[in-house]
Length: 78
Image (cartoon, rainbow, N blue to C red; front, side):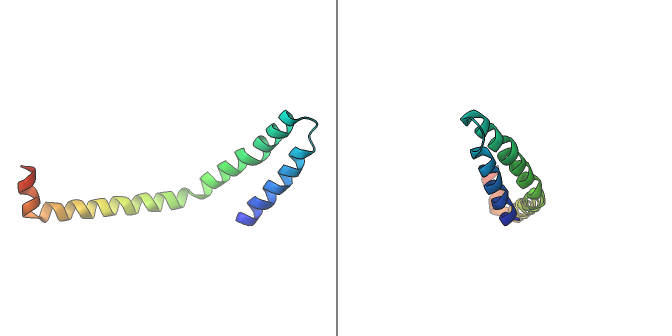
């Protein structure tokens, strides 16, 4: 997927260069390249973020369970 994104950046960059003025070129690049690719990468990373958050929650639950079973840990908090 990265090769497709790089090719798209190249194509849109060439489109932006051919615009009649700088502002139109910048708007073309932002509108056709930066915005769609940022949405695409955000959506394609959703599964990784969800799995990472689940792993963090499980690690936190395991730490909490280990702390609850440690009698010295409970004395320090009291």
